Image (cartoon, rainbow, N blue to C red; front, side, top):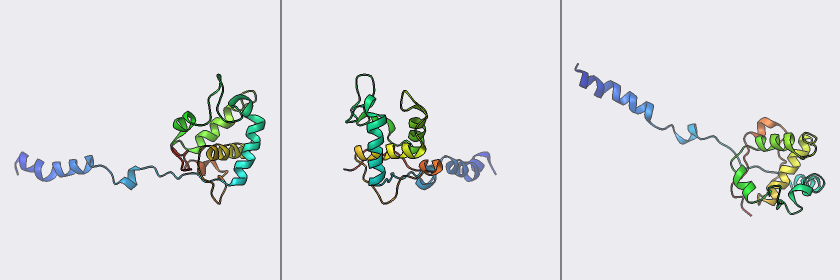
Length: 144
């Protein structure tokens, strides 16, 4: 068998298989749009008024020194697992007392942020297990 023949019959087909893209299902990280309950978002609204509105504004619009939690916020967090957002809120907020919010408080705040940014509520609250939050992402352009 000649070198050229060997390349054509053995090496090139194997190389083609190695370079071919994986099926979409195998290469796409599946993430679901989050669901939350109205009650969870209402609790988040109360927490927001007590713990967040002073810096981020009553309407989530931000101030000169703090960012809004709508618009640019959505673009910055779109596609990010909710576990990362929960970790950030827990570790960094509120500014004067980071780490003081319980995991339930953080989830309620995220539910409120989802609601205020147009995500529709569902039948189930956001899950309280971080591993489950890894599979839920902040929606890029929630439907109103």
